[in-house]
Image (tube, rainbow, N blue to C red; front, side, top):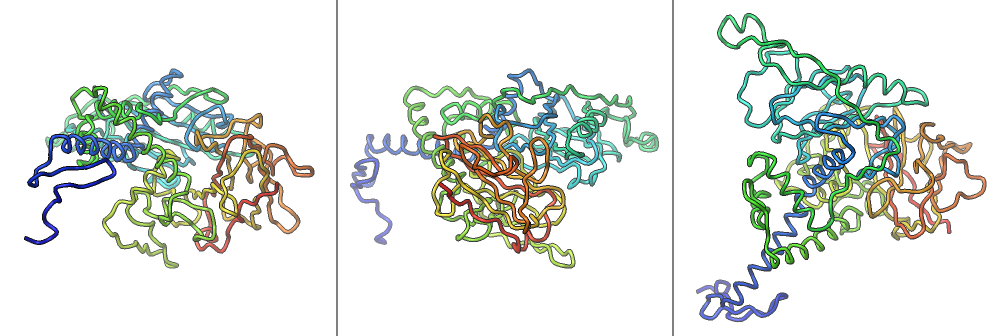
Length: 511
């Protein structure tokens, strides 16, 4: 018998002594291992379902302020620290809804000039709309089709998209016109429509009916959805960091068809008792083990989301810089880096190694909401790009009691605007201070634009008190006792971002 085949009769492991008399596990060993595997599955189930728990929390947060499915929140005064959203920005007019396809396909008519995405309720990308979408910023009619739908679909007239879940999150952002959201709000309210698709109506030809290929039905009636202004409102959309995570995930699993999840993740959930069509009621011992698994899983997820794990390819400018983005490791599907775009426009994809970049996925969804290729494609003047700084130039975490500065070289790489926003390490949401909009950027709404020096460089300061002589738009307030991080955003990024000929400075400690 090869030496590597037998299992020793006694193994001293991290969970204690394991005994295999004659190669067969003792009852005590079998129980120890069953408990340990429950713990292991609990850790994996947590880290691999953050995106589902996050979306369920968003839906619950909307419901808590009276916003139902197919209704929208909007932000005419921009988001601020009273809204607990994962890394929301304060630079665009949001319109956001959870579209419910349970009763059949839904038509969404989108406004022109927006930047938006449809994701299913496991944060898998369905389609962009607006500037990076098939309507290319002109506005369009999107037909969202639920899983398992067998009814008739139109011959044309719609951008048809199939979802693996009945619930679809729709996140739209509208750019400012001037120093106000007035025009943005007007465009959204006049053009945004959400209504059930009418089989055999618009998009179905008489010829198709006469040939027996379709039946005729009533024409759909476009309807403007209810929109709720969340400016200045306290709303919590953060997912639980305790056992409640599994309860949120179970609620999502029960609300969707079994086919909504990939078998591997569904198997991890089944291993801890979350199964479609069955109650999730762990006994006291099982719950205690799962609660311990959540502690480690959440801590590991938070660590990955702070950029503090060993390098996984997150650092955008290499290991000498603290700026990072996990999407450049595996792209929007967390499989391969985003393709390069040649000078002649040819798309040059990276070869796949067949492995999902799990740390990148965990890191991203612990920190952010919404996924789309437009977040990470290397195309100029389209979409948006983000880089994160969680530590200073010496690698120390950012302390709300200290003052820091960040120098941006002249000509930040954008065709629309740039901004940086400060977030609380604990909530991953806009930091809550008496400065309503803790941001700096090139736009002069909702707070003054940052001012450049005579040589074109822009110096920003972060700390509990504004240094003397610093312009209002160049200062972001932080809170003693609260750690923070920032996200630097470029809307319609230009070539210097992608070829890295433009690079921000590091966050430097002043005092």
